[in-house]
Length: 516
Ligand SMILES: CC(=O)N[C@H]1[C@@H](OP(=O)(O)OP(=O)(O)OC[C@H]2O[C@@H](n3ccc(=O)[nH]c3=O)[C@H](O)[C@@H]2O)O[C@H](CO)[C@@H](O)[C@@H]1O[C@H](C)C(=O)N[C@@H](C)C(=O)N[C@H](CCC(=O)O)C(=O)O
Ligand SMILES: Nc1ncnc2c1ncn2[C@@H]1O[C@H](COP(=O)(O)OP(=O)(O)OP(=O)(O)O)[C@@H](O)[C@H]1O
Image 1 (tube, rainbow, N blue to C red):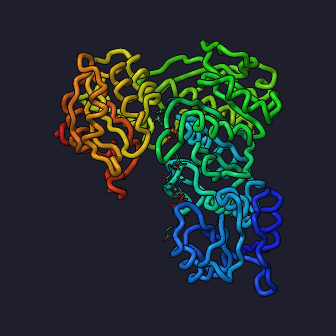
Image 2 (cartoon, rainbow, N blue to C red; image 1 turned 180 degrees about the vertical axis):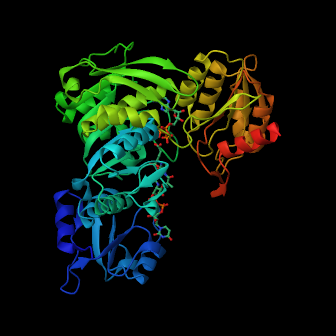
Image 3 (cartoon, helix red, strand yellow; image 1 turned 90 degrees about the vertical axis):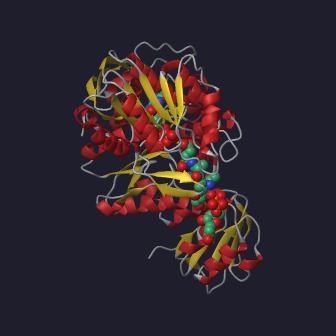
């Protein structure tokens, strides 16, 4: 059984300057044998973390379930008689103590972590695919979509968050190690740093993909600088840093890496045509697009500097996911899996057959347009997607079905209108996780910023009907883009995850009906 001595907890918290008040440790209670932050999951002999929108009923319930100790930022009357750890920051303390309780599983894993506004999931899947082959199926994956903590089918499950709560993170790492995993590929969101979900965690490789305005709002970051600051923390906590030199704020990003990492362990990559406008060292890896069509692309990778040549991985790569932006995600995966010891051949084989749920999934129709379902849900991603599709020849119209999420990322609404004005011919505005907002009002806000001389707009809040409208009006020279929901099998409405078949399932059904 796992356990942690109360004395050890005190020592760790003291070492990290987190302990405000020592608990009274009695002979009767020397160790805890479980940890929980949710009273419904607390067990006999466990420690309960009081965090977030805490209510006294939670500690009372945890106690009824057998919790013997609690940790909080202030003393709580309902915890009278329990061992109490009063700390200055509950999130940091929970991360540290969870890692200790689960025996610091991170020390037994080679961890590659991705951050960036866009491309985290895609790059993580690419890297996981390559390393799965290279490590004989001993690579775990913690992504926005799925978590894979071991080789058994039941060890693959849907994620609730991009980066799990610290306690869950270390729990899952422990399971991964106990299941024989040697490597882990994970996504680190800016929220994870804001909420100290990865406090104390060091990564073998940290990747910074890009930063564009997003995630600023009441439930997210107070402003863009805070969003960037949180993302940069990944580089400060990584032994080796990999940076997409085409990111905005490159100098600031490079300096964040350099503050704690020897430049010998920082790798920059960029497209062949890109010239940095700021003073950073020579780009280590360059890539060049050979061809990109609606179903796949082919590109070449060149290691430029001596340190890049040591990883090598020069070669021609085919990628089964279209979109030039995905070439950049693939290069990140080639470099990081190379740093983890994977061969060029493993990367070539896996990228040629890569699949990421809800990312650039396509469906060819007989008499209507080529259909794409893609998770693009802010200006930068919708722009990258539509720009790529526009660059493809033999396209008459680009028809886009899109909505904007309620209660978060409000700037996305204007961003969608901007991307549509720049690249779309027809927009069908619909619902996308309206939350507690009225989806029609959200659609009206997007519509208010659309240039109606360029884009023909219809508002249809019922998402399946909106998809039907788009497909029915398309000809076989058009492209239909179902943006924003990716592989989501729900619509978040009034706090409830309402089941939804997924965009691609809806599209396939409509196409079948049209072909009858
Ligand atoms: C802002 C934030 O980090 N919120 C997360 C946080 O909530 P919280 O600590 O405030 O917890 P709470 O919901 O107020 O509840 C208080 C505490 O009481 C406990 N409780 C609750 C009920 C009960 O009966 N008993 C009980 O003990 C809860 O387990 C919790 O520990 O901890 C919860 C788990 O303990 C998370 O579910 C929740 O994520 C919210 C739902 C969320 O959606 N966050 C988003 C913004 C997020 O983190 N997104 C990023 C991606 C964004 C990006 O792309 O950058 C992500 O990493 O996923
Ligand atoms: N490098 C990139 N640059 C711009 N857009 C991208 C890039 N990679 C992916 N995208 C677009 O962003 C969408 C989301 O990609 P992905 O899920 O990989 O990113 P993410 O960082 O995990 O996103 P999120 O934080 O929203 O979960 C894709 O469906 C695609 O449209």
